[in-house]
Amino acid sequence: MNRHFWRVVAAVMAREITAELRGRETVTALGAFALVVLVIFGFALNPVAVDLEPVFAGVYWLALAFAALVAVGRSFAREKEAGTLEAVAALPADAGAVYAAKVAVTTLWLALVAALLTPPFFVLLDVEASPPWGAWALTTLAGLAGLVSAGTLLSALAVHARGADLLLPLLLLPLEVPVLMAAVRIGESLLAGEPLSAAGGWFRLLVGYDIVFFVAALVLFDYVAEV
Image 1 (cartoon, one colour):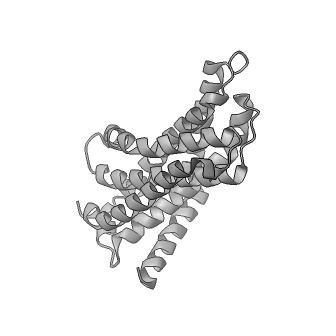
Image 2 (cartoon, rainbow, N blue to C red):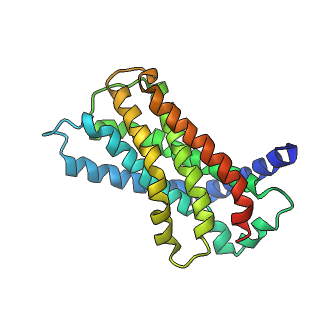
C-alpha cells in the first residue's frame, strides 16, 4: 500500500462524508431503524416484569446487526443511482482503496448511531449494570468493523444482481454469525463486571475475523469491481 492508495482512500472518504452531511440519508435511516428496533424490543420484552440483563447483549447486537445490514445495503447506492458503478472498476488506482474507504465510512456512521443509542438502550430495557465503557466501546467498534467488512464486499457483489435487497441478507447473515457470537459473549462478560481480558479468547476471535476478512476482501475487491 503506497501513498497513492491512501490518497484514494482519503479522497473517497471525504466525498462520502461530504455527501452524507449534505443529505443525511444514511445516518437518519440508521438512527430511525435502530430506534424502532429498540422501542419494539422494549415493549415486547417487558423489562418491568423480567430482568433483561442476561439477554441484553444479544438484543443489543441484534439491533446493531440489523442496522449494519441497512448500512452496507446502501454502500453503493449513490453509485448505482448515478450509474457510475463502472467508474469504480475504471479508476486508475487499486479498487481496494475504494473498498477500504467504504468500510471506514460505514463503520463510522454505525459507531455514531451506536454511541447515540446505547444510553437509551440501557434505560429503556432497564439494565442497571455499568460495564467498563472503554472495553464496551472497543468491542462495539471491532464488532461493527467485522460486520461492515463482510457486508461491503457482498454489497458490491450483489449490487448488479436481480433482487439484490433479498440476496444481500441471505449472503451476509451466515457470515455475521462468528462476529455476533463473539460480540455477545464479550458483552455478557462486561455486563457481569469482568474485565475485557476475561473474554480474551472471544475478543481475539473477533479481531482475527476482522483482520482476515478485511485483508481477503481488500484483495478480492479488484475482481468484484470488474463483475
